[in-house]
Length: 315
Ligand code: CUA
Image (cartoon, rainbow, N blue to C red):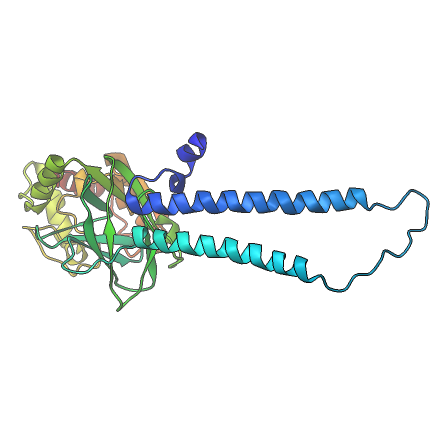
């Protein structure tokens, strides 16, 4: 099991929801393994025991029609087994999907193909990265801006569909600090595989510091390259889709870039967020993530350098 835990996140729960699901899965797996062993054992035994003697023409075996006691036994055992699994499942549903009413701590809105993340209390927005305080349960409201997506952090909890016009709320909690991978688990178009996000679970103090930092607005850039990049950002209409708090509000059809440079990934997981990757992305986003909403602006290398310089100031 320890090596499974290493490679299969569903076997490495770090929150009560995922732990309940893993627990039920292991129990059902054991029950199924026992049934499998009994059935294959009986089939194997029968094949061996009732085999025809070599060369002989097998006689017609005695025909039996109906055996009430056997029929009751083979109906009762599966019924009891399914009944036990049903009972355990009710408990798992309670634990993995508790009622989540009230005001959300966090709103996650799915887009083709990225995640808009809003912390309403702190009044800011970010993208593709969710932060949680370790050991505290947050109420998360899930919405979709376009098609049906599905929110899933295998190490923390259940999957849940995000249907346009039908917001839902879940509880999300991590019991160990760490970075957990999240993904869209419902086919939602060409770049569905690159609709990833990260959940960063951190101690309360670090979480509060993160909230405070994220709520800060961007400072106007200094340095010639960054200033030129900011001018390009406006001239090339990047600002129409990407908001940068304090510098420009946008239509929210693309990720908020206020603290872009401090995020870990680029393009909802398609690249790690390094200056080299950013340059590659800006040079031709359609080559990196074909079909994404960001067009290829055919930027020249000096333009890419200036835009990168500006975006790297957004810490
Ligand atoms: Cu969104 Cu798949």
